[in-house]
Amino acid sequence: MKPVAVLSVVSELFPLIKTGGLADVAGSLPAFLRPEGIATTTLLPGYPAVLAKISNAVAIHEFQNLFGAPATLLRATAAGLDLIVIDAPHLYARVGNPYVGPDGENWSDNPIRFAALSAVGAAIGLGEVAGYRPDVVHAHDWQAGLTPAYLHYRGGNDRPATIMTIHNLAFQGQYGPELLEQLGLPPEAMGVDGVEYYGGIGFLKAGIQLADRITTVSPRYAEEICTLEGGMGLGGLLRDRIVDLQGILNGIDESVWDPSADDLISAKFDRAHIKPRRVNKLTLQRRVGLHEDTDVLVLGLVSRLTWQKGIDLLLDALPLILGTGAQVAIIGQGDRGMERAVRDAVTAYPGRVGCVIGYDEELGHLIQAGADALLLPSRFEPCGLTQLYALRYGCVPVVARVGGLSDTVIDANEMARAEGIGTGIQFAPPSVEMLESAVLRVAALWRKPALWRRIQRNGMRTDVSWRRSARLYAELYRELATGEIAPEHDELPPETSDYLMSA
Ligand code: ADP
Ligand code: GLC
Image (cartoon, rainbow, N blue to C red):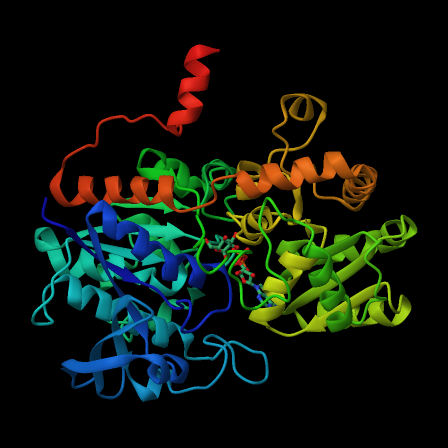
């Protein structure tokens, strides 16, 4: 079968540039699609970090004027990924975070910077770049949201199929109507069935409106975003398009997140030998300024420090959490006010709350390898990846029952324990009281080592790979490229279906 060519349009990509899960997903999925007959090329902006890490770069196209100055498209590879990188210094030659300047504020020309990403994606989709023409163009999040719009208004019937994936509905890319002409969109685009959104221009709205299909990163979040509250202003439109909307769970790259081969942790371990986790616990306690004691329950948090992630709930629950004797290890960065509040907590509870404010990939791994449990009190969570890493590392996830957290963690309640299938703790709703109750449950379970080890092992046995989801993406791409609908297949791994058949 001829491979389906997919152009993935995205603003961050692990291991080149990352602020969150979007980069992990965009960076890990292509390798898992290859065996499914999907050839992915990723289009991304040429930030300094990206240009520094690519190899074999070949200039394949020049734009005389890409939103204000010339730009060059480079074909390149890095970390096994096929890339097209936009070398446009006037838009992307800024060090550090791809979205915000040193003052912590969004770059004021972000609409232009990401419209350029989308416009280039559309130009490639329309075959204007010699040597490569994709069957499907796949846009991720608001930064690529105008891609389906440019293709719709420029391409007519001769355009490739488009997919818009929502990784987070809270970031919508909403700008003033006066930008329409500068963005190169025609006047007729400024309507409810175009890019118009509450009187302005909505980048994500445009993508949701005009893409052939919409996906998001968990089945549960696909349901939530069709509601008034979860829809964040776009619920009505998403409900209108519900037959074109699909939730496909994120997977993880198990070679990057492998406790038995992870060079970023002190002691490697696997399901059969969980004990070395104690060594990691001591290293973690030292790194974040906690009292070194392996006989204490350590609760970890690796997260952007924002309202979404419920950090304030955790801080409010601290007196009760610490009252159980537990310690809390935090690695994160985000809202200045929340960073300050976390630092204040460290001052108030020295040795019992420890933190590193900043972005540190190594510590992200060490927490998974050394903390006993991972806290995710998110108010909403499209998928979440850290709970998947936690499962793989035997760090028991304690999650709010929302979005992808609800789809990926099995609460170790009475029945689940009787069946031997619990992998973590869920609580609902995301409130201080329910988080406190969840931590009390965790502390009680942790005091029963055999039971705790069972939950850890169940988690470590969970299939959090891309296997199932890569197949779903491949089926979607193939259907859009060829019109062929894949036959239904057995969702369960063979050993499970045998068990069910004989039960
Ligand atoms: P989101 O994309 O909403 O931030 P995800 O759970 O999908 O949440 O992905 C977050 C990713 O970023 C994970 O790979 C996590 O380990 C990583 N991460 C988040 N904050 C930090 C941090 N401060 N230091 C290191 N890694 C972090
Ligand atoms: C977003 C979401 C997160 C998801 C990630 C990757 O940043 O907040 O839940 O896992 O995208 O899809």
